[in-house]
Length: 290
Image (tube, one colour):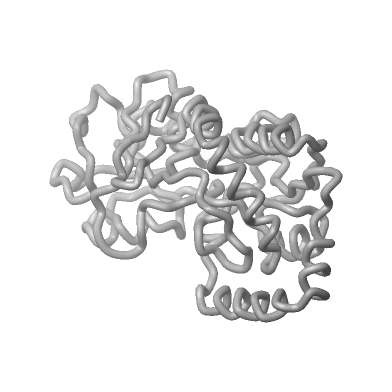
């Protein structure tokens, strides 16, 4: 999910019908030996070629400081090959200029079912989170239907799923919007939202879990980070996150799924070290060692 998946999610949730048609076409083509060979040739077996945003912490940056950088390093180590990045901003045209242009073979952090990629199994599950000061009157709030949120100033990234949830609960009247698409080299809406919570400019904020968890840990004041797992209706607040690869590359998908299964404890440790609020299949918090 990105500032967007970050909020990341809206960028990557395309029409599932189109994805299904693409998958069907790929499946039909993969039925012949020539097609299987062609698909296999698309993946460079000598190096792990990853496309990523050069300035999108806590996910990736050019210094290799993000958690997706760390997971890519782990994958390259397990495969016994070198890691090579192609940097491209998470913006319009990302797929076309990266996986679509065959400049790489994997993109980290795609929402399950996101068009137009082929998704692997999920390597983590998280949710949008409500963030507020632990010493505030909101302490203990875990759902947007809580009456204590009425009349509160709540930060929300414009155009993301939580905006619909706030509207459904009658909370948009006092909401403060933060930009969805920015140049992260110069602006960070998530960091600004956390600063505004600390300053009392807003009473609470909603961020994609990996972003909220990461920046809340760096806050000068103790903050509650509450996954919004009790919300009902569309859009969803909980998402599974996968690796994105080109449609039809089934052998590559199986190889990546094997990595996820075998390395899941190590992946979880990386994510938890970055403050990512992980969830199990019952949407309960996942602790270290599980």
